[in-house]
Length: 370
Image (tube, rainbow, N blue to C red; front, top):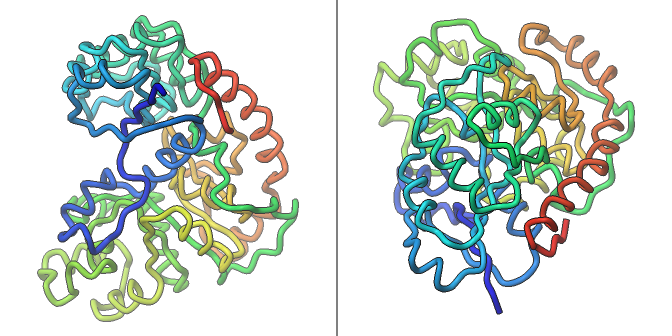
């Protein structure tokens, strides 16, 4: 029976089996949010499937697969060139389906400097598929500017995946500020300007620490390595300690380490991640997939949109959201945000968009299970 290949990271990861944090960080794609759309696509296409690595042999795929599916993220960005992948796709003779491709821009400038390799990739895929799945209208506009016209707006596949059985939360949920989970966006703390410049992301780290709220980590290597047991606090040098203390506005190093140990959360399995959310009244922050995970687990969530990627998805999917420049982080403002949030609209829009996504998959020749 024909098999569909899915180009992706592992659907779940056993932490200690990786041997080092560097390996663990690599296999998750430097962001545990990647697990959401990876798992979604695996579950949304019926029939025999196999995982394909990012260094695949095109000739072998042409021989044994009927199609290659590529779950994508914010790849329409000036910072990453997908030339290597373009070279592999250009050698494929089977259909190639790109799902959930998004643009990343400060605002809706319409003038992203897309690297040549990435432009080659999307054109190669467009020649091998009925349509490319884009996250929103802005992403579609950027693809059109590259000469790619066969584009369907479907959002991110994670929007349509139930990570467990759940009931939508009530329209006006009870929100206790001390029962929240905060998420923010940062990569390595070695980037000094992040620690020393005010931003919505730094504000969220400081708010969580000052209120002793649980905090979700998706791409922060220093905290994630410590929580996974690959490093110990004593091995972190003085310079890094100083930067981390600035990020959190912590009074001293020992109290910051204690905060991580008591309140830091990181997941490499989407089932465990989803089930853990029963502990919270709400989830708040800048992480798109951290927000989707909460909403698709029946927990009230609010996305702080801070660039075209997060704003586009909030608009397309009716995700409860607030712009970064409007965010006020104190107990009364958090309660007020959720009183005003229209959670019902998200679930209503989700069902409307699910139909569009199912139609897209069917048009590609798949039997959708979404």
